[in-house]
Image (cartoon, rainbow, N blue to C red; front, side, top):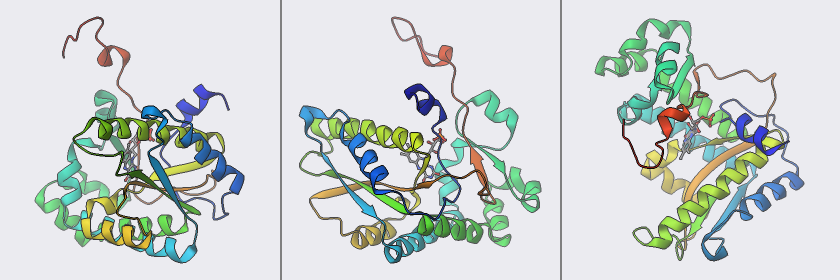
Amino acid sequence: MELKEAIFRRRTANKAFLKKPLKEEHIREIIAAANKAPSHFNSQPWDFILVTDPGLRKEIGKIAGDSMKRLISEGSFFNRYLKYFRFSKEEIDSKRSGIYVDKIPKILRPFISKIFSSSGVKILNRLQVPSILGRDARKIVSEAPLLLGFMLQRAEYRPGEKSGIYSLISMGAALQNIWLTATSLGIGLQFVSTPMEVPENWNKILKLMKVPETHELLALYRLGYMDDSIKRPAIDWVSDERRSFEDLVSWNTYKGK
Ligand SMILES: Cc1cc2nc3c(=O)[nH]c(=O)nc-3n(C[C@H](O)[C@H](O)[C@H](O)COP(=O)(O)O)c2cc1C
């Protein structure tokens, strides 16, 4: 696949993956691409945990499901991230950022405008939306053939110091290499960040994955082979829109909006 094609075809994978394990040569290619990323002084400040064990994936999946259920039922997720949600084509077309919830069960449609109000959370709970989302999250995480933990070494990742920023810049480059390589191999990738939003659940994941004190686990992904025949989840979103060139750039000096 051409580089440009991989860049423009890359998407977050929200659906389940094929249950077949990833080929070891593909996993090696992905990690080699990550490690080819630039890093300050070629420090390669990262280490990875590759979770393939079904029992461990099941435990992590349970935690992901529980985190999703809690965040939605308590309303904390929407309170935190309301500004990124779009519920109509017109809204996403005009804002050209955020995520457009384009798939929602019929029963929920009449309540869309209320979802983010205090009565919205009650309605979502009454319609068991947190349980549906939690169940889906548990399933797609535990059934993903590979979970990948991205760690930075604390000796390099020192928040507040330059090496902290340099490590994060390096990590971004490595992550994008992972994502583009996965795309070129027909492998989908999704961040599993909901457990990070529930500190005690994140701690459970750190323990399960035996993340040492010397490292910080900064991201967890699920990966697997994509297949067109697999259905989208009951509630789903897309985020293909991007801001325009004119909106993004100022020539020579910043002109503001
Ligand atoms: C730091 C970070 C955290 C993210 N967390 C999640 C997540 O928990 N679940 C998810 O489905 N997508 C997550 N995403 C994916 C973004 O929502 C997605 O990249 C964005 O909407 C653009 O969509 P695209 O990746 O399909 O182009 C995350 C992305 C980043 C960079």
